[in-house]
Image (cartoon, rainbow, N blue to C red; front, side, top):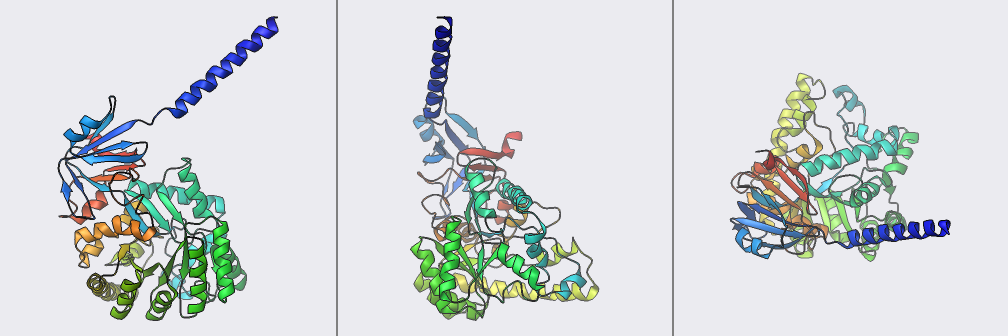
Length: 456
C-alpha cells in the first residue's frame, strides 16, 4: 500500500511538472516597445519622429508614434527608451567570409606565390581543424552582430559544411550571430585559386574548399552536392575558363532547387558569361561596361558592390601586419589612388544605369585593432566617398540587399510582419553616413544584443 501511494505521488508530481512545462511553452512571448527620437525608412527616405516599434514574438507588430503604440500595448509591456537615437533596420552584409581570417604574409613570401596574398587563407583549410575553424567563425559572427550586422550572406571559404553548421547553431540559439545565408563550397574551374600549389596541397584545398566545374554535367552535380548540405545560395567563381553552357547548367540546377546563384565576376568576359547564363547577382563586377549594366537591368540581375580595398584600406592593413619596402609602399600608394578613381567611376556608372544594386564587405581579412564587425561595417561608408548618396548606401545594406537575397519578406526594413532586427545610432545617418560605424543598439529577433544607450 505504501509503495502504491509513493507511485501515485510520483506520477502526480511528473504530471504537474509536465503540465507546468506545457503552460510555460504555450505562454506568449513578452511584448516589447522600443521608443526613439527618429526612425528612418530606407526605402522611402522618410523619417518618423518621434518613433516607436511594437514587437511581439520576435516580429514587428506595429510602427508608429510612442503615444499611439503605448495605447495599443498590453499591460506589462517591456519598454526600451533610446532617447534621441535613430532607429534603422538591422544591417545586411551580402558578401562575406566568416570562416577565414588570414593575416597578410610578408612581402617576400607574397611575391613567391600565385595569389600569394590569399595563400594563408587557402592553407587554413587544411592547416586548421574544421572544429577550430568553426569556433573562429562563431567569434567573427558574434563580432558582426555586435556591430549591427544582423544578416549575412556567406559566400564560400568555409569548408564543406562550416557555414551551414554555424548557421544552424545560430538559428538554434547555441551561439550568437547574424542570420546566415550559407553557400558551403564555392564552384570554380581548375585555374582558380589553387594554381601552382603543390598538387598534393592543391587537391586537399580543392576537396575542402571548392567544387570543381568541368563540363555541364559536372556543374549540375556540384550544385546537387551543395544542395545535400542544405545551402541557401550557390556561389560560383567565374573566370575566362568557365563557359556559358557550364554556368547555365549550374544556374538551371540551382533554380530548380529554388536557390539563387551569386557569381564572382571581375573582368568583362566573366561578367558577360554570368549575364548570359542568367545569374541572380554579379559580385564585384569591377570592369562592367555600360552595355552590360543595361543587360543586367533588363534581366533583373543585381550588382553587388564590394568596395573592400577602396581608399588606402589595403595599405593600412598591410602596414599593421608586415614590414613593407619603400618600393612596395610607393607602388601600393599609387595603386590606392588609381583603384579608388576606378571605383569612383564604377559607382557613378552603376547609379546612372538603373540596375538593382546591393553591397557587401567581402571581408575575409584580419585587421589589427578592429573586430571583424568593425572592419566589415567600415567598408560601407566608402561608397558615399565614391559618390553614392547616403540614402542609397543605406538601401544597399538594408532593403536592396534583402531583395537580392530573396528575404524581402523577412528582413531589411522596420515593417509589420518582419523580424524585429533593429539597430540604433546616436545621430542622423543621412547627414553623416559614418554613423553606421558607431551602432550603439542592436536587436535581433526581438532580443537585445547590445544597448550602449542604457549606460548613459
